[in-house]
Length: 141
Image 1: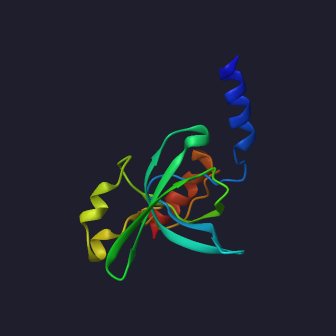
Image 2 (image 1 turned 60 degrees about the horizontal axis):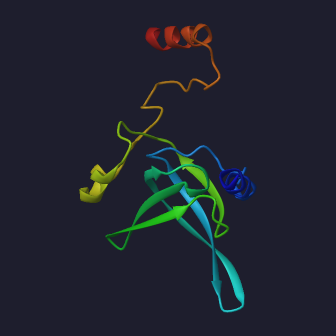
């Protein structure tokens, strides 16, 4: 009985307009900041280094560099303080947690794009049969 009530309350609080976020993505998180009686939106942009939890307790850790100092924020995705999340770039990573980025400086901190430098961009909805002529054209060139 109480579990059903908790699930019903959690379901009503979930946001439905969140984009697909994965580890390695560069995102802009629009946060609502309340200063006195005024409210404004501040953008925090950085790389997603961790996703944890599920449902209403889903958390994302975003890391960015400010004045050569790393800044990380752990944000609950379904919080009313998070106004909007925009995915700017999808990074190609092979780890679930990117803690190794904390030790990196300079250009080694950058992540490869998910396209991985392909010669032509193949749409995500393309079937393998439709992608074969594109691959043949790039092999001829």
